[in-house]
Length: 195
Figure 1 (cartoon, rainbow, N blue to C red):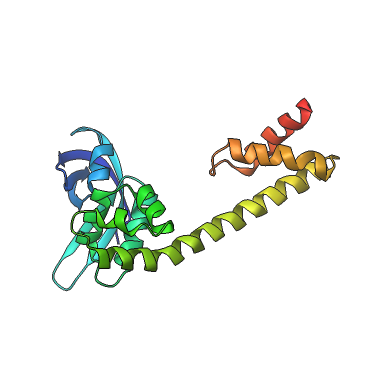
Figure 2 (cartoon, rainbow, N blue to C red):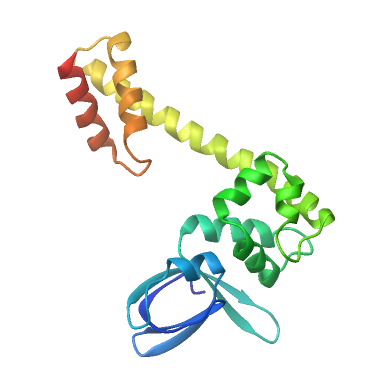
């Protein structure tokens, strides 16, 4: 199964691209949001791929970000929403805006997407709300553990818990989610040195 492609852009249309990866041309269907983020023809681009296999076809769907692919996978998990409709949804609304509309149960916003009626919008909101809440809980618990590890490391260096909690929180907020533990510890120590 193909999950990722990086290659030269040979052809770029609003709904599909062809990538040359090691002399092989791969066609991937894309949402409009990915089209707008891709470079020009002949540039090297990367796509996160979903491989859709049926009895009589094999199709690749490409996305400019993991988040976009993730929401696409959530959409196709809903009964009655296939890859083409999910792609159409992501062409009509940014992935982050769709997640926000789902969290707020904004059926009107979702039903503004071409090809989506009120019933489908309601089904999307109802079925995906629970999955998004679960994702947030996982991210919160991961963040909580990282925060506790940083506090513990600083306490082992002789600081008191009350002194380090604020510095650790500020450091975590100031740096991206992908910052590694060492970077966060170093930045927290810098903040402690200023106190």
